[in-house]
Image 1 (spheres, rainbow, N blue to C red):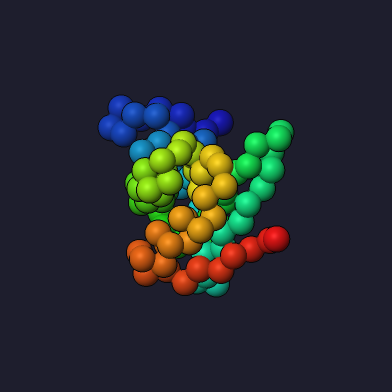
Image 2: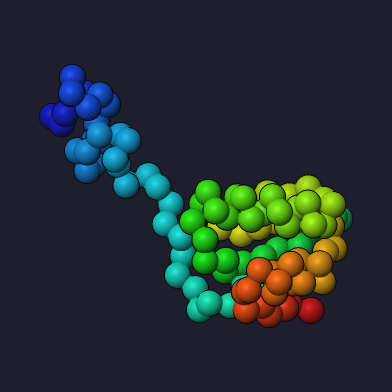
Length: 110
């Protein structure tokens, strides 16, 4: 039987036995990349989506940067599995914004 609650720390993680606030079990880790951000275009259910993969940012920074990219493109989007998804065909705008921010950028796909 494992400890699930402590009066000092509150709820405890059953895997690592640390307080839930300090638990690292459920947090997604940023995948290691080669330092190049790859920008591509995909078609999903008839609609075009621009993808930016490989940004070397943590989750909060990535969300903030995605917000800037969405504003630059004048479009909506999201961050899923460390990939920034922008609605519409905005490959050139995204590449320009990433280059201006100091990232090494390559166009991926056709």
